[in-house]
Length: 110
Image (cartoon, rainbow, N blue to C red; front, side, top):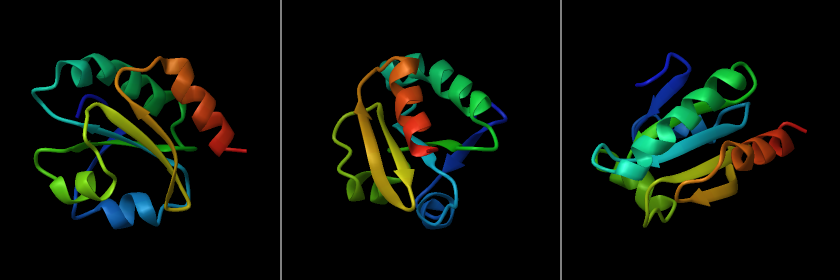
């Protein structure tokens, strides 16, 4: 992981870490070989640090964790999904700006 604030999500821990979390969870669906995913990584790291203690932020490698990726219809990466109360409330496909994520995160915290 690129940051101490970014968690690693897997098929095995997705239920406990994401779906039953008391706080909103931002999940970055990515893969090692994906250049846009790598370009997005610093934004995800910054969000994780900025929202530490209020929002859980993590990455799920779609190559190693196909079940969660298939369950949420991930057909292109990077895809970032914001979960609140176990439900997706925002979905971002492709490279997005930090402000796009912040708007969704701030709305989820209200």
